[in-house]
Image (tube, rainbow, N blue to C red; front, side, top):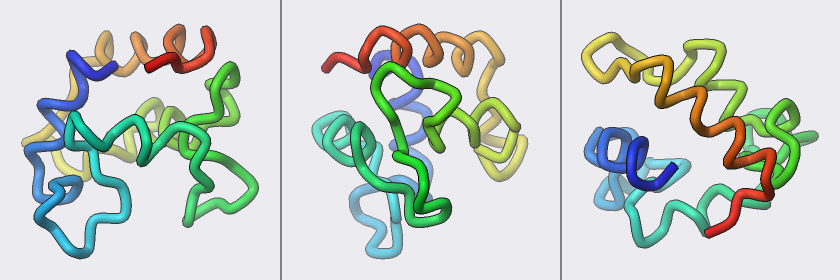
Amino acid sequence: MQSTLLPKCAGSSCHDPGNDRAVVVLAPTRAYESTVGIDSRTLQTMKLIDAGRPSRSFFFRKLSNTQMPLNDWFALPPEWIEETRPWIACGAKK
């Protein structure tokens, strides 16, 4: 996940560590700690990344339901999104 998604998402103003309003910071040095096992602020019954459970991971749901990124300029190739599923399913190891 870090090698593919992070450079694309961390560089966006939405997930940049310099953005004081960023809910989830995806800078390579902070992405894991900002997502894995962390409660979603939007849907509080879910974790952002629920290790071992892609279908219960809010982060993966947002990616796979094309809710992220917010516009086509930052569009992610489907294969990048799908590669997060096995990573989460296998325990979302660092």
